[in-house]
Image (cartoon, rainbow, N blue to C red):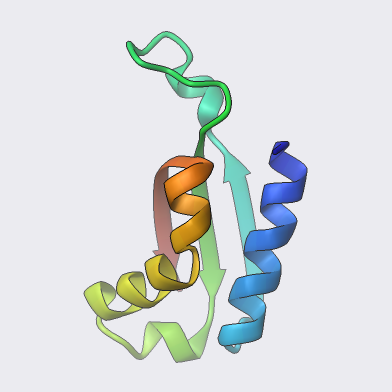
Length: 86
């Protein structure tokens, strides 16, 4: 899967489940290219979400919900994910 397709899938899934004012997804994989075990098919992502619905939850609870929704993508295409909620 290429990064653009993955970003579209993530945006769609999160937007269907939560009220999101804005979403920004950044590919940070280039920062990890020299790391041992780097896999070009698994991405390092940074998600920045503006969502009152998610911001009202505890950080742990909001992350759990996001991880549950993105379970397949995390297992197959995402090596690491950083989540910022505002």
